[in-house]
Image (tube, rainbow, N blue to C red; front, top):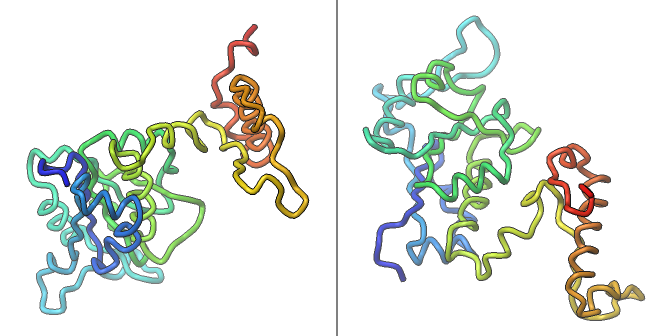
Length: 241
């Protein structure tokens, strides 16, 4: 177990701190958390309300359904989580944010951690976004009941890339999105399953052929399922020729 302070520290601002660490307390992330490779703190936003009802939301200005999380309450929560000098990026999980990418995940994992605000209801007062320099992040073209599930997803993606968390460093570099391609098909024993065998090239021992096959398979899968990624794919030397 490490004795030094974790390089990656995550602070989650939420109305449901009991949801953390949740799945992050198991498997790779859980072992890394127990071993001090990263740290996690979940703060209850209601603790920063000032009225007797611990209110964190109010009706939307201009009318409309639902409720909006108040800027003043969120400001106190963020200021407590990130005192002056805290360089961690401040993320707001919201469906209107920029899509989370593997490149952004790598940047986050290499940094000091993150402060993550989990929105609820109809969202947060817009003034807190600019007032506390929040980076709006979306994990998919779906609407969730709150930002907690998105925060768990984001942290899981980051933590697995922290040095020492995965057994082999290649596990984090040779996978979907690592080169703007989806990952190639994987196989393992048994050699024959329900009449289907492992492609011969993978058992040939010819590493150059295997690498070429995997690249071709990645391109084919990406072309079929995510053609938008192909424009980001770096050209191979033989293709440039």
